[in-house]
Length: 326
Image 1 (spheres, rainbow, N blue to C red):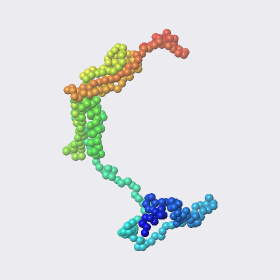
Image 2 (cartoon, one colour):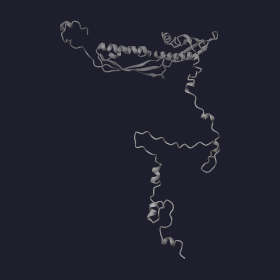
Image 3 (cartoon, rainbow, N blue to C red):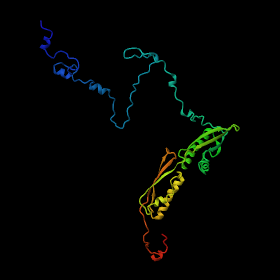
Image 4 (cartoon, one colour):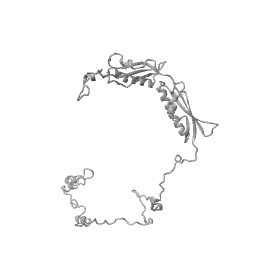
């Protein structure tokens, strides 16, 4: 009796192959295994053409209405229970919510007025808050400083306000104002704080107090003018009326720089340009100082040339030479 594998060896390639290495349909046809469908189409042409909707030969004709294929709605009691892929029956969803089928109301029926918040509700009969204002700490910082503060103050020395928050906001603005004014006089460590107090003997009345701490006064520790050679050599420095030890006051420094721009054109430098100053503060020293540096571009030194006339002159050149004052 032959061994079980001898029959396969006698007719090689006839055993069915499985897996990724199995021969395709074309390969099986080459080996003599017939394809049951062969090259027949999946959907015959006659069945495909019959499924197509009829078309009109008129290209301007309207489109034919499509047949509704909506499935008829069956009562909820006849719904087949839903099942999962494993065959488990899902619980019923319950009856349909009747609110979902109620039509929406018309837009005209909605109230379009915006909601009023607590901040929007204003009682016309609500009394305004009256307040007084006081400034402390400016009297010793410099003459006229307190008057400048009162001219720019948001509190205005007192008045009316809608509420306490408004009074507090004005006081905060005055804090920043006081610091700016003190720094303009050379008090670069200045601070200010405001407080709002009630007046016991006057119900409904407030008092805003702004307290200033000027700190130390900064002075000029050095003055350095960066400029080209001039005639005379110290022309720019001599026209800058600043000296070491002067307070670093904004008005004083700006006035000195303006003097340079005014005087140099009168001394032969009509194209002078004063640059941007730099002040380096030293707050670690026992006496706080600032190193002042000013760049100045003098431009070329110029002089007036000969007087000449053009066109039909009313006076001759000899007569015109009597008038020049340069």
